Length: 179
Ligand code: SF4
Image 1: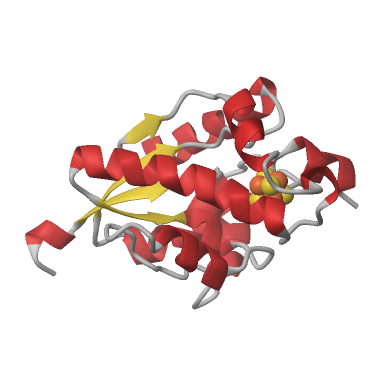
Image 2: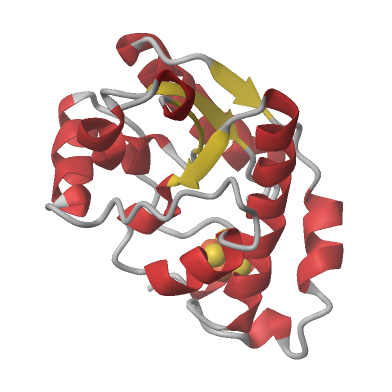
């Protein structure tokens, strides 16, 4: 791989999903970018960040943190009609991906790097939709981390490392609707 293509800014939603990406990013010069203003509270943000920091330290990845600004995220997703009651995988989620990926694209531009996202690890997330949203930026790499058992690997390694594995996607609506 040419040196110029080795650098990758990886938007990281949580430590368990990062575990599912490890095999595919080992050969790259990866910087993790924790940008998750979608999270329901500062407490949840801090908890996920603490676990992401453990992951970053263990595997030697630099980590950049985008400060939590839930009001700005809410302002963005509230433009979607019926956003509060939209189901997971619905239009609110598309606006949510757009918000986080646009912030990651800006950071990637600033750092002169390509970027990808751990969001594609989850079987609950539509990778094609994520690719169409991220692909607006020429710096986006459409890596489907759920391929080759990415999700299974995320479960195994996060368990082994005793990482916090949340039982809801992230925002207050997914917290309310969790089953
Ligand atoms: S359910 Fe998840 S992807 Fe959808 S809006 Fe909430 S945090 Fe974002």
